[in-house]
Length: 399
Image (cartoon, rainbow, N blue to C red):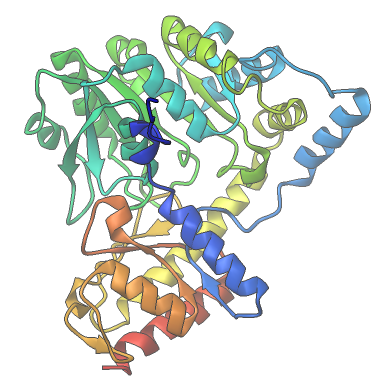
């Protein structure tokens, strides 16, 4: 009898999301009574704005209980087109839009539609944890493009890493985990780089509305005709409107690519939740003052956490231009002994922080760096202060 192994190579090689795993552990400890300060999950602590919730209730009462078109309702696709026109200055038709159950699945579909096993992608690092894992699922090779120490991607960095097998650049600006925003002049150079080498771009712009101070986001798709035709823009409602649990993401791009993504989605998840789609229409077309209010609070929290972290001996933290993450360099504390443990890696640091000081952070190894940890400041100022006080105690008073 032939004995088959249980798991496929694809499944056996997969890793769980480090951010979700640590967030889940922090929540479990909280449920058991621990006073954990969690900087782990990339999830706003704001409630979804009332007018969006009202739209969902109205949809339920109106009978939105059934399947929609697999790629999204006409109303939501139209709303996405208008939001793209206003936000990035590019006109798309509804056949260039697909709505998915979350922006992560939109990314998954873009990888599936564009890439074959053996293809290569350029991936600026530090990177979001899921990019290399999705690439691995499809047998795609990742070429790391380091951006440290200031985390600002340049076209020159990409030129140094290009190979004949590269088909796609994965661009994430503002970035998770660094918060870096690629400056407009550099975005234009990156668009020229794409055209010069005849490659595509998957541009993850989920944090595009969370940009602070003098930083300015522009989409690479808005720069040239080539870039528009060869870029799949990924966005969604989770971060901008505090709708993480509603699971609405979307992608826009060339109709041929979007149609292929739609075919894959029709054979996998089918449509995103009908009620959540109705809520998303209200989010995208309604009053945007809620976005400005949340953005202002995130900026204030950014300033607070950067100041507090830089006040800790051995910690160096850049002030990010967007998103709601900081990626402090903690490598100066490596080799120290804290609470009878020697700290040599970000993982060592984060394990001790959670177990002994009840502070949840994500180790940099998950993001492709062995010098940093990631903290999400999508939590209250009081929690930020409490968590940073504990980290200061851990580093400065336990040697």
